[in-house]
Length: 110
Ligand SMILES: [Zn+2]
Picture 1: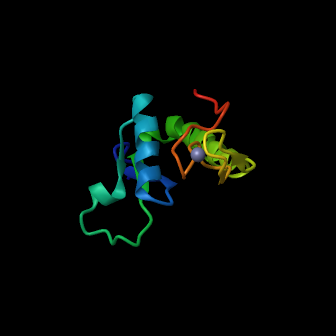
Picture 2: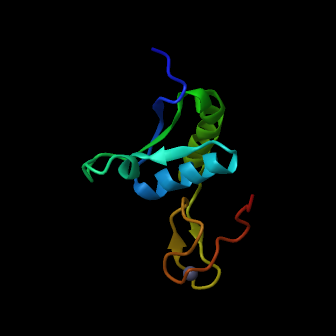
């Protein structure tokens, strides 16, 4: 059976925060998505959360997921930076200083 309303996993997140981020990203594009932990109340907490979309939306959702993934990789590869406010060295993937909370200088806002 080919049910367009069938829910398909489009993204396996590392954590719930990422899963919610992806869900909101899809919602912004008008794609209804759910996070497995909310969808399935008996899911074990150790299971990585998945973002599910309707099969009919999969084709539209995939490029958005790919872009999110590329973004994640790009962030992870950024060099560490020095906080201009307190002088701490901050891991490149962070946009905020984990010591004082100052924003990364020149961080792009989309
Ligand atoms: Zn700082």
